[in-house]
Length: 214
Image (cartoon, helix red, strand yellow):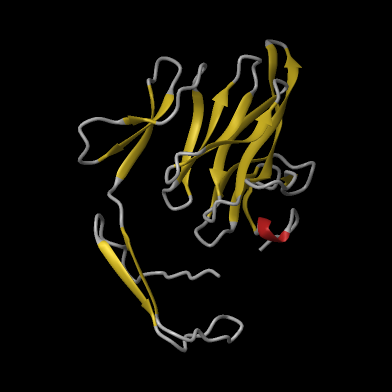
């Protein structure tokens, strides 16, 4: 049902590419296709995604290197605090402020234009550093409860959580008493994050569950 092809060199930009899978090619289960399969696609051009303006409520913009004008992707009332491009440049995960003091984790699909709410960070929580997995099925982010301090509420112990872009419930990564932050995905789907309690970078495979070290 899925065919993954990894070229030896990057695809050239703005180019038509034709693919042929010959009859007899076998799947991972050993089942061959009965006839040739061919298809084609057109590669895109390099683009830049950024937040603007820097001195007010920022929104997402997208601009091709040869475009005269940028395209505004979002119109959020209170602005976006963080954003990261993922899924091989076809989606952006971002944090949008809400008027109750919380924020929403949203996923913008650059292919379809869809913009979905993935997770709600309540006003008593801070969410930081959202990162979309290479296959687009999971979002990692650091979440901390606000605690009352001398100068008012401040983020407490940070912990990395995994959100599903489907319907699965979110789950935390690593030991419950560890301070974790700064999640980042590798191209093969492994997740790296900083564990301040250990003083180390930890690599896990969230596809195998919450406690699946590599």
